[in-house]
Image (cartoon, rainbow, N blue to C red):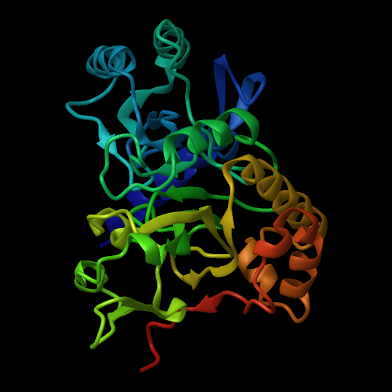
Length: 339
């Protein structure tokens, strides 16, 4: 036990010395001595092993062009360990990198335009499902949206981390309810009676009970309160009687996972692609203003304060317009010790 304590003291002393490292590469716009927090913010995460770091790569939407993937494998084999790690937020991470190798590693990755990600209090790399490009369930182009966030908003400073995600349909693979700001694809179904034969296929296709076939005519009776806007009825209809109405994104704000998870709140439905950047800009503007002076506070925690959800929706009213929900509730805590 004494030896273990002595080893722990030695380790802590060593870590104290290593809090500042001399780095030749430019990280966070700086060169020279940097502390471990600065390195982590730049995407270089200290491991428990001496002098070794995990390097997180920037992979918006989880999509990695093959040329970048090949270069990453070359670099990882040269400077890292025996594997790369896929993070839960779709980033590639190269563990077991010595900080002496940072300059050359960054240089070689840049040959294929692969850049390092960032951590810290800022807009993080967006996550997304495959969207409507080839997924039969996809309703929106989530990959296009992820690239837009990466280009316009990545790295913007915030009071705390700020995560965005895009799901193409109500299956919600990208977990929009757990993000600071999430967008989920949605289509409002419209029924055209003239084209309907009363075949009842749409009622069988609807898994939510939003469509029930009339017992006499077979024609659909639509209950919007049960509808998830998934478009299954539109895809199933053999005569085209069900058509796409409003198409866009359901917007959730204030979610997070971790030690104290929150379920984000829906604040709008059917926001079109062109308005998504304005929504993000408005949320970030409000978050930075209202989080000022409150330390490291996530937007979900901020929105649980009295009057804050109402204040955010008022701020976003010009962009949300008629698609805004009336009186949305604050984010809801998920308690693991309450039954």
